[in-house]
Length: 283
Ligand code: G4P
Image (tube, rainbow, N blue to C red):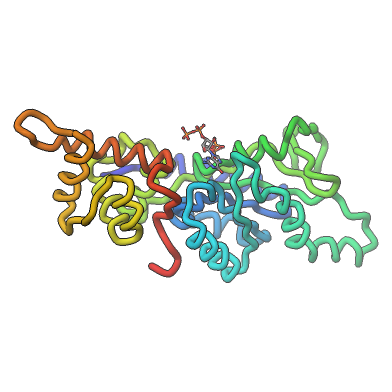
């Protein structure tokens, strides 16, 4: 598996994000709660190092709640605020303004000290594709987009969304690409829909998933495919699931492609249960 990000593309994405970051007081980084590290680009740490940060662990409806809780603590320990949300249903999102205000308190104090009437706090949503940036923005926007033009440093009119009275959100998110540190990161991104699955070898991706589930979620795996035992060898596991699901070709041989397809779709649709593909304590 090789995926090339051309330096030119990277530089352009970086430039665009930097332009946006200049305008704002706080960065709201969205990650996929099932893969909170694999779904972030560490470049954000460099780009947003000067800004307070709120990490939103989105798609929490699909993730293991115990692992998500630990991830929230992990980010807090790194000095960032965090919130567990489900943007599709709008869960946890009411606390966003409160957290933003908490994070910007030093700035508000500065305004007060200088006797300046505090202006609205400006926030930017940032994240890799498919983590739910648009879903979050649309939920917050609720048709409350206001056009605000002549701002220092704003060359063309930016659209800002009012969040309550005291916060404004830039309506276009900053997009960073995922970083493929190793093959496992790629598998996690393929399984959660952050990158097209066609880029990966489908069977290899499901082999990764089954090996992980056998260790981390054996009961869910047994339950879903009605298995009493989980064979050590992943090929035997394919055979067991294939036999249960009737994925047989002539001669009674299991059709591995079909098994891979079934397991992959089951995972994507959350049919195996609430599953996280990485945990902070594994690291
Ligand atoms: P992006 O702007 O960061 O690229 O992401 P976007 O909001 O477009 O969301 C990507 C997909 O994730 C959408 O599904 C969206 O409905 C889903 N999504 C966003 N937030 C949540 C959440 O909290 N829980 C769940 N379960 N899903 C969420 P889609 O359009 O159907 O795309 P796909 O699922 O077919 O990839």
